[in-house]
Length: 160
Image 1 (spheres, rainbow, N blue to C red):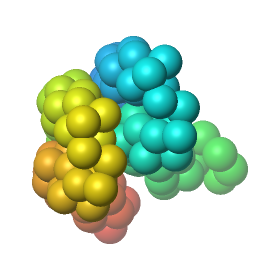
Image 2: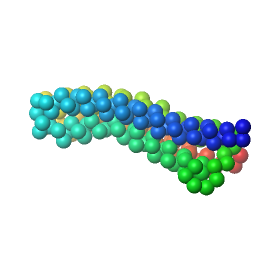
Image 3: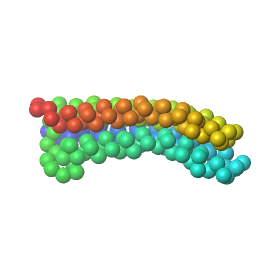
Image 4: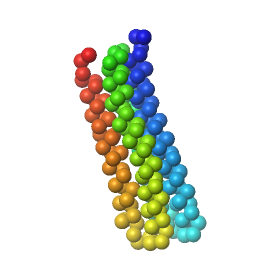
């Protein structure tokens, strides 16, 4: 029972990396399928569709960042990992914005990327405009990243 705090904190870190990573893997895969279809017709569009394919991958990076920050704050990467149950639950809650928004936004961003890849297939000169659509979804992943970072750092300062 004494280690329950660290279990909850580790669960939060793992969920942030896991769910955001799964969302990104699904998203990059979906966009990759669309991109592969485009380059079978015209491989000169490879660079443009590759950028659009990679956009849903950022959530996995953000989730990994939250996991590293959390692991460092709770002492797993060095220091004391003596975390109270209350703090462990707070760390778990702090990781949830990135875990949940990362998972969902990566999949939704993939759909926008697939649509943008279709635009590039027909009108390569519209790449700049097409990139805006999946980039707008990225905004919410960045907001989740920021709130998770602020929350994890904020938990560290709380005296319980």
